[in-house]
Length: 251
Image 1 (tube, rainbow, N blue to C red):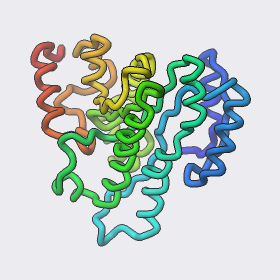
Image 2: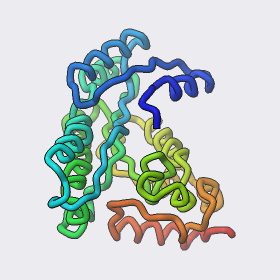
Image 3: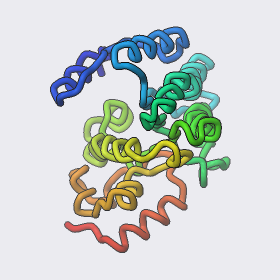
């Protein structure tokens, strides 16, 4: 996984967009500030912030070093907290539908010892992103839409390859499912759509009318073979099962 931003920038421009590739240490508030200023200068403002950066270590607390703990919390929770709120408020004043979208798990059904006990340090860091979403949604209500998105299953990324091996990617969905759900969320009105914790498949089914046949295009295996992601509570599965029973998967 290359740290260079050049490749995604090239893909954006190939698709017809404009890009400004920057190397930024999300742990450094000054670097974030400078990057936002440079971005706003080039594009005339900042309308959307997507918090995708995250560090992961699923070890138990006895096996997690202080260095690893600090790394996860400085990137995940603190990095999310350092969103470009001033720029987004200016975007709101200009009527430009500003959003903060964070890839973070839902709070409902997850705040219990069983969930956090799987990996205490990582859970604290990851749900710190969820708490930042909750707080900023209340603080910026009516001005900036602040929401979270989380995948039902593992997504076929480099991180998943490191966790599950290359073969494990066969039981994960393509990253485009998150991109499609994010695009749908970011097009909703920021003045009213805020404080939501969406699951990719549920959002695509309920908000965009996706069917099981369409969702099957994101993977090469049956729904039952997909690897469930972390932090998926029972209430989410109840809703998934209800939606799927009304629209069975087509083999």
